Image (cartoon, rainbow, N blue to C red; front, top):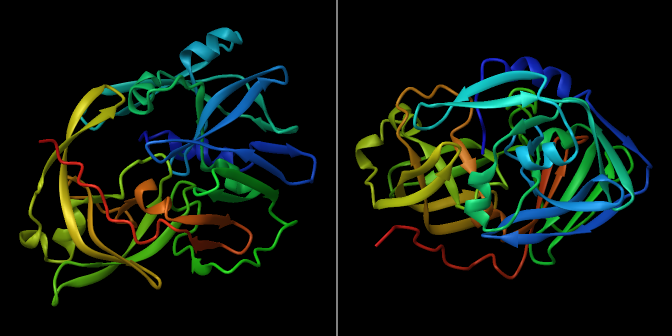
Length: 314
């Protein structure tokens, strides 16, 4: 979930300086998975917890309108972005907030207020807000899908020494608006394959979302066939999303066969990345994000070789 706006880049420049952390000890938090999307509990006050979506693909941290009213958070300045259906969606800057996670505190200087009811429809669970990828400015984060746990350490106080494979982030965090990135190779058939860069988006339940412009740039758009469509919840309502099947996706030594995902019909997408890797792939690993070394570590779990579900509506 990645809202777009001409002003977000200006805000983002401040966001990497906006998260202040207290206490140097690391913390481990239980994760609730809904449609493979990780949810964690955090409190705006130390006395009451609310459910937040941990979304590596969100540039900023967002609060729902209901939680903002509960804590009397004002709407200070209005912004807007254009949705997938080309409709304006409003969001608002508010006062700094302090989030409490397992006895640790994070101060976000530039949180935003937005109507996030569409996410509630997606995960069928009340949601207070979205903790975005700006946390990577300060923390090494481990997301364990199998054990349903979320751990974080101050970035200079932990070094990954596990058995997982190392994957350098090919794009700087600032270039990708804060989201971590990883290289993957798409194999369409025996002759057509190419390497590209994906942003990692734990807020997407699907395996991937790709842009039609990627296939046009690699002269293989005629070889992509729409397999069907599926329903997606978006900021301005329910939309139909085209579904394609990629015969093979390789990420380092890991090979995934017959992978279903979404296709964005934008033909003129000139972004430095091809699309997004979502939680249908991420759930097969313990994923460690290390901004200090600019690496991502993938440690496979028992779900690694599970087949990919077909999301096409019958």
